[in-house]
Amino acid sequence: MSASSLRIVRLGFGLLGLLAVSYQFYASTSRPGFNPVNYFSYFTILSNLFLALVLLITASSNKMFQRATSVRGAAALYMTITGIVYFVLLRGLEESLQTPIPWVNTVLHYVMPLVGLLDWLLVRSTVRLSRNQLVSWLLFPLLYLIYSLVRGNLTGFYPYPFLNVSKQGPLIVTVICLIIMFAFIIVGSLLRWLNNRRHYEI
Image 1 (cartoon, one colour):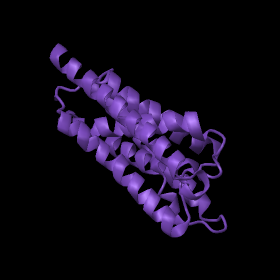
Image 2 (cartoon, rainbow, N blue to C red):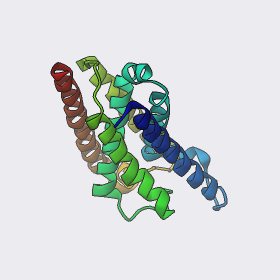
Image 3 (cartoon, rainbow, N blue to C red):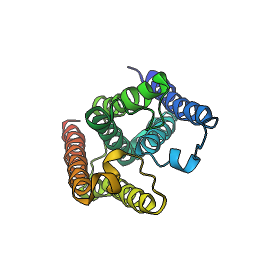
Image 4 (tube, rainbow, N blue to C red):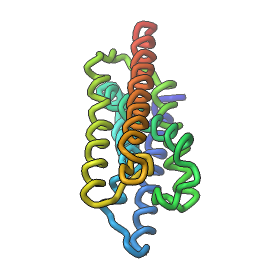
């Protein structure tokens, strides 16, 4: 695929991600009790917005694409975990996840996670990533977890059932969160290794 075609693909999927998030937000505003803060408290929404912006930015030029290698890696990691967690733990809960519109749910939980992963796997970067960059990828999920638990304790709103301490109990929540954080570390390490392996092949 030529560079110009690749930019068009990135631009298209970036706009698709923004459209899905925006359309669901607009459709949700007519629902009784809709809270915009709650809507943007879902990791799915935040990670999709992040990937969409990364795709739009890297579509601007090859120079920007190379500079954004670490950011692309973070987006690929977040979206891969989003897809895995949804598939394993959250399928069928679209109403509570605030993605009840079928095409929006498909885009946010299936299409964009695949796009983020394939963009990382198929498009080479000449920038080698350090362990510190891997650690930086893990900061956002950790901060998100702290935010969700603290806000949930204060407001009673937990974006995901497995974070609901009052219903699941602290032990179950702790175990599930540790498993998910372990998945972040494993998948992030694999994405970094694949990038650096390609770096030596170039």
